[in-house]
Image (tube, rainbow, N blue to C red; front, side, top):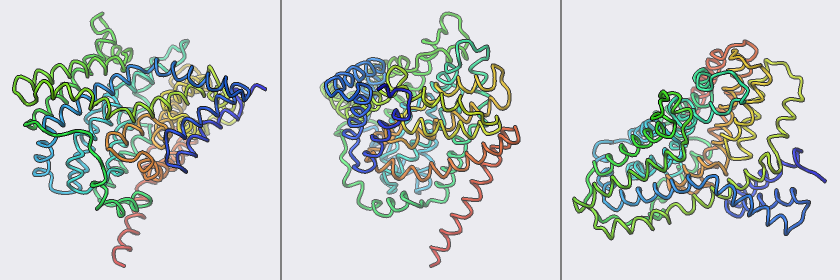
Length: 498
């Protein structure tokens, strides 16, 4: 019996996510989810299921090998910066300069906004640089992971110069006459989840308190968590603050330059087209490789590190990234099993949307929910809006109307939200890795915050759809968020008085 493109295609990601939340064991949960999908695909033939699993794994790993190379190179850079003593020097300087928990939290978020080029780069770099500061002020690793995650994808999805903008522009159907980058720009003020998440984060940091599972985690782990976290690197160098700042700045400049290069800037393409057509994974590899060379020239002649210490960072950096690469590989495999070539979960979702005769005013809210669920189940936001944006174009026609722009914005918003709360999302995994936080702790404390914002987004898109105005949707979402903040603040004051 052929189970592809049916409701059964939802079973593998549901199994993986449920097991991960129940057992708090990510690797085994993902593997069981993958095998369940392979069993459905092969008619419950165990031998063929295992064969299919490793066939998909090999294919997905090959397709994403540049991301793995980038992670290893970045891990080496992190190890070098740490071994040089530059991170310690920066931490000592930041502790003297930043004098409050609020200051440490805001400094972390500002750095996350500054590194807007790519969410992978953002997650790992911000965590590495800011951990000494947040540790000093007893900001738990789960809270640090949330700050990193909330300033990664939500910032990248509203940044015109980023790998995400290029991915959105490339998601339009080949037959479309619309300019993908222009459409992306129009979605920015209507991307409710990204904008409201940043507003919510600013309030959390300014108020300096947490509630729900995050509040409980902060109360339980604020005092004892840091002593239980094992660092991966040995500090032995005499590096200064600029030995940390310079490699990061060079990495940003070289990654942006590499994006322009791979986008064809040397062949006469303009800057916007170059960013739209770039290969972000290749660019990140090139940028990190040449930054590694720069770091060698910065450290070795000044004897910040010996040559043998520099070489030791290669194995240390690789080992530090093994858990993230392992989880990413399994997450990619699960996504592959659910892809169009196998179970075709996207085809099932498409058939539901196209087969429903709902009025167009409900489409932004409906697409938001579908994108959220699909990204949550598959762990990929890029794949989600890659599936749904062509459907939105088919529904509203090949012209940038207000309802089309709002619906595409809802797709992007829901995809980022689903990606934000999914245990198998690559950015969620990397946020945990960057903060050196237990992955399930990060997911379980982040979900309530993200879902609260998601409710306001859904209502905003619902009202905006009926009004036919995306800015109305944003205003409604902001008002709801503001009201929630007032209620939560009042409750917090009442508890403090009691």
